[in-house]
Image 1 (cartoon, rainbow, N blue to C red):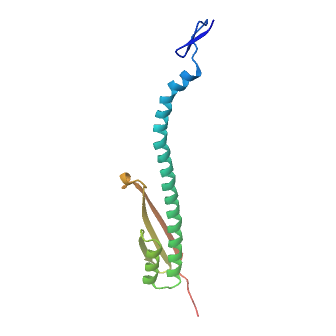
Image 2 (image 1 turned 180 degrees about the vertical axis):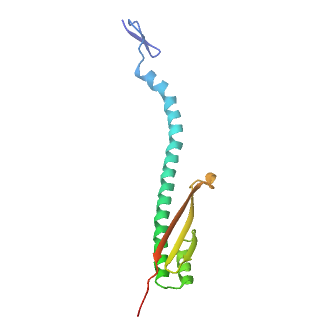
Image 3 (image 1 turned 45 degrees about the vertical axis):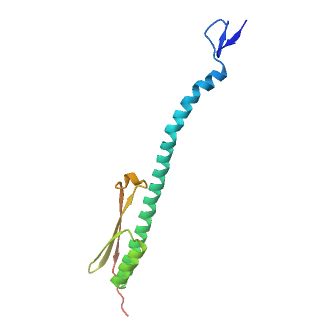
Length: 139
């Protein structure tokens, strides 16, 4: 004769067996603990992906702005106008323009911080530059 008493099978030969309801009650606490650990981890992974996307977007846009600015200066456009346009297109970037006799170098540098206020000082500095040969016009 087999009888269930307190979640265990009694009167059965061999090791005691547990019923499904006893497993569910015992595992409920571990599921809660695993969830409490997993949610902050998933949040951290998501924020890391958002930050990495921000770094990549910043790097691409700074590269485009540096190339456009260097080409415009190499064509002979006003340095003040190009510096103002560069600051409008990349307002958080530091701009450095070096002109040589035969080339123009535009360097842009911008710090991309982590998107968490408690880690505000941490991040990466993105540096992009473009060198363009001066264009000679003979009219």
